[in-house]
Length: 225
Image (cartoon, rainbow, N blue to C red):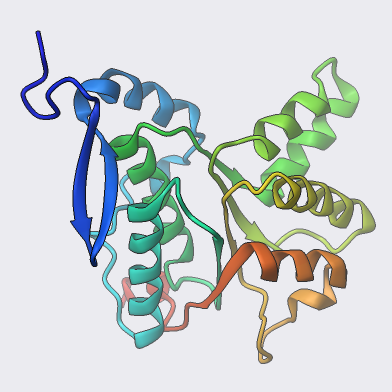
């Protein structure tokens, strides 16, 4: 039976900000979205993160929300990824996860959520088992959309730098969209990104991502007052 929404084409075209944006019709991927979401590795705490339940309290947070929404609307035809930086508790992971959930649910595209610190621990655990480090890394570097969360929270070691360099370099060369969140700074004030990672990695991130500051009160603290 022909879908009455898309007429069997599998696509819906909408005009957004004067641009034609294509969306997969739900008839094409409704049954796959649950599978993709399950395989995306989104932690339980963030599984209900949406644009609609992110409440910006500052101009920085509002801009970050708008940029993430725009990224989703244009995906997969995006020229750059995003890097969200700022102090803890300002909603960086919430916004990044909302993008990933929407891309899977409404565009039928695959993606991976990767906590960088947990990734390093998982890689280390393979050294004492038969599990392959290569398979773990490949799942991350080859993801159609990668959320690389909390970069810089790990201990500052050459080994950690090497793993980040590997991920960034692969995705840079292959032009794969990436959303990075970090508490490190790109404009002074907080601990500088360049103090933990080499200038080559930082330079490539600047070229492959739009750098967005997310500043405001720590939601985790204010929500308990």
